[in-house]
Image (tube, rainbow, N blue to C red; front, side, top):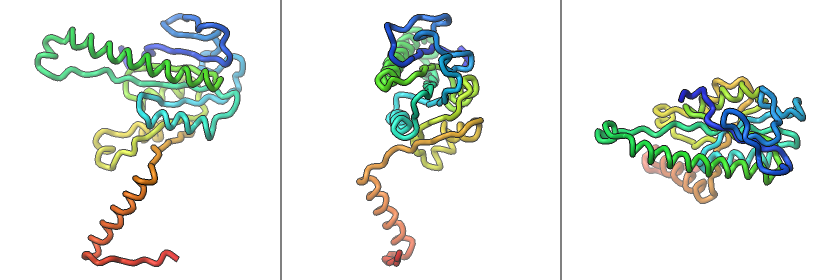
Length: 222
């Protein structure tokens, strides 16, 4: 399957009266309420927000931050989870992959279903209209492509706060989205506890003393 194919959608509309109907193309649809742009049919002027999600705490924090600080009544959320299929590396796995692949894919399918149920339930609990989309491929590319398909007004993503070296080597989803998106992008950094913040301050102070030849440098910030 190419990264351009949707592997499944689930749609949520406020105050559902019964279970979602099964639409064409393996898509779960509740009352068939979106147009070809992904906007709800009952309000084509609704604000459409695309949010990248996965099973990380960072993405959940970004989703919750959006709900607490930006969401407004009538908005339509498009949640996208991009899946990069697991690779098999060992000699034995390459030449006898059937059982390994079945196990790996079954585990991925279970994780995907649990994650979808989690976020669909969040939308229902907050009485928010939206859809949950699963696609395979790189997250950054998938988020940008879907945001254009559904004519989104905004994109929200989380960031793991990678260091400069790791970000250079493996890249950054948030960085890709920022540089390729056609709409405003909000990047939510993970929350840092007071304990970790104080630890970072102490480490910075230690580095400062080392660079000053072991002498303590007193600064007057007043």
